[in-house]
Image (cartoon, rainbow, N blue to C red; front, side):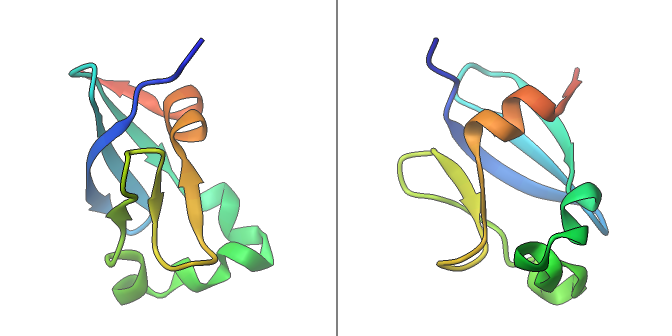
Length: 82
């Protein structure tokens, strides 16, 4: 089953993203558990965390060429937002 693509992303708080998908649903995704992994450690810096963007094509949200979170992860682990 294909997952919906990311259409937009906003910052809710220090480590939570509000992700809007192309199926008109939104999910809140808490990045905190990922911060224990070395790859995601730079996201602890608030200014860097706020630089998140939607990857071209909507397959992920990205911060740079090394740090991204896939649409699958955002959709399956995100908390539905009305």
